[in-house]
Image (cartoon, rainbow over all chains, first blue to last red; front, side, top):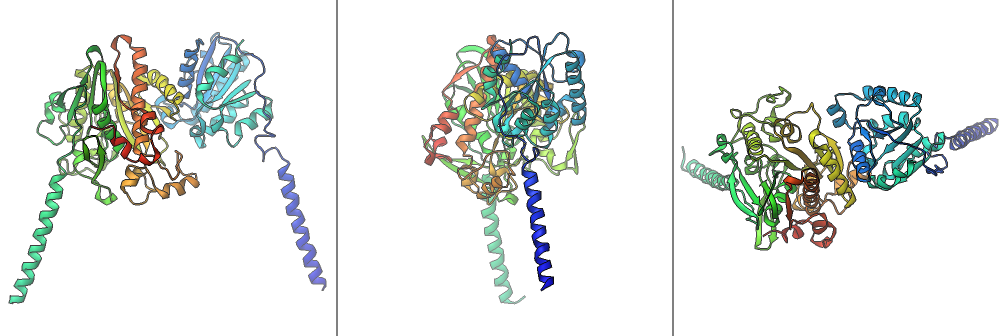
Length: 202
Length: 382
């Protein structure tokens, strides 16, 4: 009888500990990368020209963003392998994030080299007081092991983010932005960049 | 030998001869490939050997349809059938040839870029040899060929294929893949000579923009995608955005500089053309598919791909409606239109203008769903 009571108590204690583990996890920020989902959009223009556009991962998305900017009359410099030496008089750095093995191959750089370049560029931009806009415009196709390497290091340093919503269904980017207090606007398609991005510029 | 043995031997011999005759007829029939009918702007049907006589009297020589406008303008080239087992490539070329009304410039269309590959198929894949479509002129038969040059025309494969001129090494079977053979060479094997012929055409005719139309398996990452040479990226970016605006999901990739032999790399490097390749999704290219049937090849329907969609294994959405040939050809033909429009913006003095070719909306979005899978595409063909 004592054995049975002990076994029941032990089983009960184990269940309680499991429940405790579960409830602790559900309250943590890490299990809810989107936070409460209450990431704020941009409320007022903050960025200034001149603008330097670069890639974060060497997908061609940065070129498409450049083409859209040209369509709406925004002047910009574009350089896929920009370093801090290329910042010149720029006041805003736009990094279009998206990993592409073809693009990395075309640029003659590997993922680690690309990360190192971006770190050096972002540090240079921060030191020079540039605004940084992070963009992820490739949608679901630009998510995965390669692209995800570039998202966190770039987005955490951004002053503003624009994200095509199909690429953030897991809330990774919304979570980073809400956690760091970075305004982020979700758009339905890369073509919406033409309306959202100009609104960020004074 | 007894009388009984003679009879048995005679029966076996007769059966063998009957099988030989039957299979020989089937084998030889594969050398006859159906050609497009000449649409309203076709002014001439030349042969690739007209630009490179090293292909003359070979199975690598292939018809080149010349579509010319009344006004002067630039030149474009559309390559269908680079891989003869990717039907939306050559069926887009057929559709273009039979429907385009060219107003300015010249458009060269090669329906079977690897003509030899269209004269056989891959029996080990259980592939179709033929499919039929009901067209304006009645039922027409189309081929389903192979990815590679017919081994009757080029054999044996080396253990290792060394690409010229880069010396890149690939599997020996890639020796017969024309999209690993560019820029080709005049004294190379047949596949290299075919590739050289295409490059010679581009150089001789100052072709400003070249399209290579493909299909790929749904589990291949570069799908619903355009790959462009770096010199063509401005045009490709503008065209890709316009495709997105018209509701076509399309990603854009720049051609890697370290992967040789492909149109988007070598034609950009060895000619002055803007080289663009497009990929669309077809289950019949994939390794996760079920039996290769007409419904799969033309309808893009495969229940195993629906299962794999649920397992998050694919790079394109896949449901019971598949990816019909109308969607795949519509993507290609809309892509050709948008990239040429972007080319025209960059080269207003060499504009290439045409109309009449059905695009994504006409072929797919506005179609009766019951007619998808070949019937609707056939309604545009002569």
